[in-house]
Image (cartoon, rainbow, N blue to C red; front, side, top):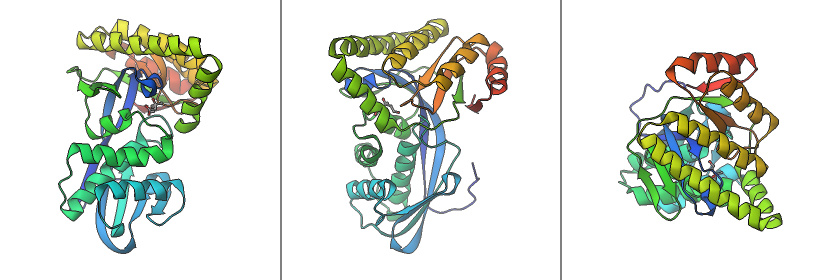
Length: 304
Ligand code: MEV
């Protein structure tokens, strides 16, 4: 990530890794996620014209009058914050890859909203920030559960459900390796794919979504007592269900298999799927071996 050396108004937010429960969380069951802390930083400065947003690390440039999704997401987010969409330049710095299941779009919206609050001297409360991030996420994800927004703004290791919001587990972040499959994924397409599967196979789908929710509950209990072997096996089971819903890819399957073959306790795709990242749960003893093996298989380690 390009370092920031300015004293401009700045907002920070987290990326996220879902350990258990993505997709099912959209339909009401719990999920378990861990933050990648402070991985998005946005700074604000005065500039004439519509608010602009740039993320040089992604080659992204948009502004609040643009007709593309990024422009609409920015406008909708600003609408919740209740400010005029003019006279500011926002610049984001990040090492989160976009469209990879790590909550990069929510992190960008959360850090931007915080930078806008600093610049305009508005002390937005958490609920307003959450609604602002959700407004932006709705443009990219269609029907976001709010999990990405909650982790972007909150952090730690949390259990989340649409009905109950975020609950801290109190556990420290577990040792993980995040592996990029080499392809990008579009979450809204994958959410639609799960919905199509639910339409075609309503009973099987309902059972499997419930089962994923139960895995997330058991995983939350396991991480609270630091039972990492159990958490790892729940992740393996969760990946199989996600595969059934059609959101894995051959590259994600292979990344998981390589990580497990090298000693990981468990591995699964993380986030929307259809590309993007897998997460492997490791022990400190096998962390290096897992990183080396996935790299030797042609994958990139995003974080470990
Ligand atoms: C995306 O990071 C996670 C999904 O469950 C969608 C959502 O929760 O909004 C696939």
